[in-house]
Image (cartoon, rainbow, N blue to C red; front, side):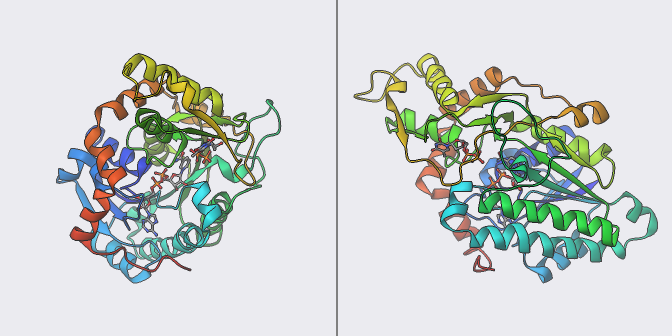
Length: 362
Ligand code: NAD
Ligand code: TYD
């Protein structure tokens, strides 16, 4: 297949592209606006493959998308482009509405127009895979219960509300226009190339720099962590074998309280980076409780039984093995980290491609 991947310069999109190029025969067209979260350095050698192409584009640009579909004539779309950080969505929801809602709507229309003009055999094989989050289900009260594919939507933040809206659009394009869609809702990812505004990379980098480790509220919120490469494999499995119109929940069976995650990172650093920053006796001494996030969801947990039963997918990493790999990666990839923390990758992007297209407002 030739797969048009949106958001392929992001954390999960780059893992999907590395997997597609390194582990399959598929070709990739990466459509990405290169916002602050998009970093082509995360693609490594896979960007040099003859099976890889890149188009810098805002998914809300209809003309640009129509031209891209015509130029590359893909067999499938994997839609990952999004604004993805809850805290940013609280400070500035407009970009979330622009990309996650308007952008998904424009992409659906471009895909439909292209799909409807395909010859019958290619139309039958075409897929539009929408990549979403478990945050659309809201949060779980207490330690019992799991999100299933039937859990009603109850998003809490501007981020999760915009993703919930995008899921509804995708389902409507299936029901109303017959677009052959697949939807996946996944729990929190972690792993290499994760932008250090999210909990796990932020804690690793702050600890190494001797900065405070901010824990929101009481640190008792629970997330269900999945190693990003397990997610990438699940997504490709769903694309290749999932049933059209179906939703699959993806999760790692790895529920942990935030404070526990922070403490485990500190313990791994004690072992893997025993030389502390000046003035720090133990990494855990840097833990600092800060004001809670408004509307903070208490607990997420995924029931991944359907994808396991129907498609035979299971995570390969445990939280222990995945977290160890992640901490080791951040200790051994100074160039990527320096590029991200200094903003050098942004300067390179602007030199190479100019300022981001579009104003970012709806
Ligand atoms: P990310 O923020 O790391 O990357 C997003 C990518 O999308 C970036 O490369 C960015 O440049 C691009 N992008 C943003 N706006 C765009 C636009 N208007 N047009 C084109 N490209 C644009 O996000 P991520 O963590 O890799 O998440 C990818 C997808 O997976 C998102 O849809 C997210 O909702 C979903 N998801 C994420 C998680 C998680 O834990 N990170 C969990 C479940 C689902
Ligand atoms: P995050 O990585 O932003 O993912 P999400 O909000 O999508 O789950 O945050 C994970 C959890 O960690 C969430 O409960 C908020 C909390 N958190 C902190 O306690 N401190 C921090 O500095 C950050 C970024 C997050």
